[in-house]
Length: 109
Image (cartoon, rainbow, N blue to C red; front, side, top):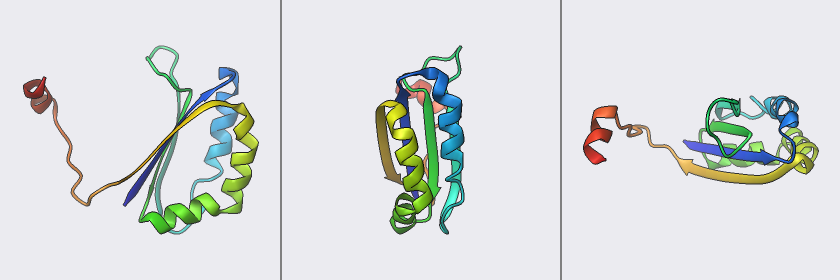
């Protein structure tokens, strides 16, 4: 599986909700898209971005179909001018993803 994580810093934080709504129109666009979440920065929590997208795909081909889909392309064109910065990380998720619980973290730190 491939996890697709994108974070945006906007020119104007007031555009975050409409930015999110545009991204939500891309949920479920292609076969092989397994998860799709769009989050907004919370005013009382620290953050360096206004909007975050986390999407999961079966494989790199499904991610490519998503990125090339006409709706995704149109949304990208529409929201592009609103962004000040964009950060992207695509990575492979193993079937047995490793997580660390709090007790393990305490030992590492």
